[in-house]
Length: 144
Image (cartoon, rainbow, N blue to C red):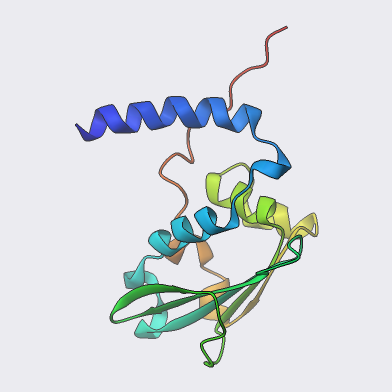
């Protein structure tokens, strides 16, 4: 059953990658996916506080992921703990990186994303924040 679901997802993502507009991005959905994408086995020290600040949002700009022994928890309010990694950028930039549309380096060089914090975490983001399972789905070719 899983191969069928993955195949359906690949078809949908292939179409969506071509037709997605800026207004289509959903920060809540993105953050739920990012919460599920944290690989705790790759977090040095077994605990991390990860903060995301989306510069293109007027409301609910700040989001936190608390990664620890009990799993990963998404927070909408400041948990009052020291932040280990701080992502600053647009929803689209974070989406594009997570979906494999561009790399972290490309988004940072373009000024669309900034990552600050503990070097053990910032140097290895792709190890502990896994990309989408659909990252490798090719973009459809435009036909005229």
